[in-house]
Image (tube, rainbow, N blue to C red):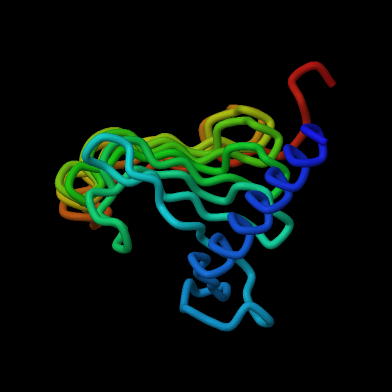
Length: 191
């Protein structure tokens, strides 16, 4: 009798929580517009209050986590701290740091195989500092520096084998001075 009562109580609690969760779910299309569940591609469950911040979690329709972030507001994305986005496979797609809803600090984007695709820095929502992009094989494809969202200083691009392709200087996001280009014929030095 006692076991039956516990089973009924458990089922009632589960069913009640399931109904409440359905009412607190927000459905989104591919452009993150609120939509009906029938045409949704993502959904967000009710944020959980953790201290003075809300933990917001978005999901793919498959149930896999799409994004996880802390926010100062329950229903608005005023992100605070580290925000992580995921591929549907569960691997990290990108991670970024926010302060009062504005990008501040490092932002990294990853290929689905887990290798780093690029990393950059932000200050008050603007690209500021080093920028490095990588090919999927791990070789650097491009590197340089930003100041206030503008390319500044020496930038260099590379071939997939790591050899220099192009190098030159930017001032206020415009190429200046003489740029050098190295042509690569695709034949390794060992051949």
